[in-house]
Image 1 (cartoon, one colour):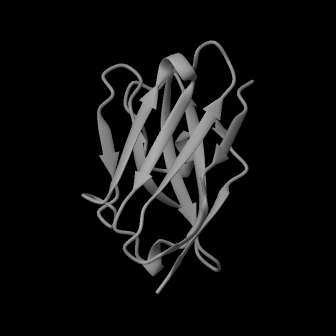
Image 2 (image 1 turned 90 degrees about the vertical axis):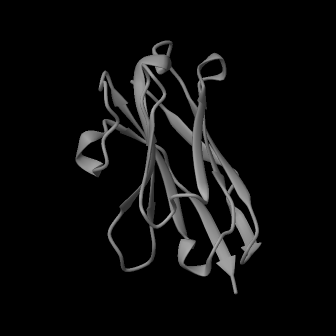
Length: 125
């Protein structure tokens, strides 16, 4: 069983930055592909970014490419999402997710085994 706890959300003005963290329990964190997803009110949960466990390759949604950066620190069992140049349309609850054993991190919610409780990000215009 893996537990994921997100932190770092909050209220920020458009153009600002936030860094989200996701702390994971479990000794095999380094073998989990990790992803970030978000869900705005009335919308489906959507892919934001993901990172492989083996080669740390990263993947991004087109809407955040060039503004967001996903990274991981296996020694700290933590994955991060650095969000720059935030826009009001980035407002959502952000969730981290873990996929045990996947070589390539997925981009759909169905590929992930564990989820955090989410952290709210609100970007004002």
